[in-house]
Length: 343
Picture 1: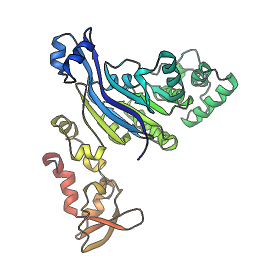
Picture 2: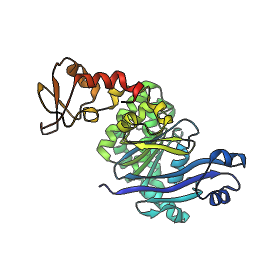
Picture 3: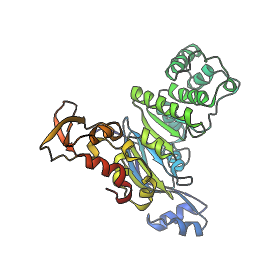
Picture 4: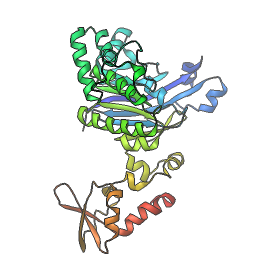
């Protein structure tokens, strides 16, 4: 079991003058409507979860669902009204300002939707800036920044000013700047939502490449379900401050926990999300045809091959050992039947 890096226990964030008093009186049973009638807005309602080392948890929901507020509580850019938040076992809410600044500087990187680049500094100077704030010598900080320039694919543009870059390139500078401080934990709040679709896809691919290489512990906020499915190890879906479901992308699509999550997922093309292992029959291994597919294959990539078979297809693991089987009819049911009957 991977070690836990972020742990939230019954975290609440309520905005309003009597927020703390009302929360204490509610014994944890917070009804957003009741609170609103008394002048309080519920941002996060009883959030409990853990994020493992190297995991990418994508938090998603519509505007106003509480996803950004949750992130701000965990980075303590805003103080939670109630509950406990632990970062690598440290109780975040017990830290004084000096300890909090040190934790942020040594452990956390943050990327937001607005690039917030310094217009009078070049790419390499923007990236080196947080290192210089930490007290690192100029020469060393520039050298480290140049490594980051290469990592995010901006070689040759290190002396450009932000105004000379496209939106996607500016976002890469923001990512490089937050990576330069070598954070263990990375918070990203809708970092790609201001980009046009093509650049956004490129940035997602780039981001996955970086994560494969760096293995950071990440909380990534988005309102785009396709983006969540592409990036996440697990997804948390929020509504009105409540985490409706926290699960793997496959489980959220196959087994939505609430009506809200079901509506969120009903238009998702399952074949793009699910792998063969998600829908195979692990017991039926009799009378298999010649074709074998990997349990890790995305259904979309092998559906056509399976549908040309008359016999049941064998499913193999990485050692080429048979671990299950799948019938062509199961592919048809998954692709065409799943959205209506939840099978």
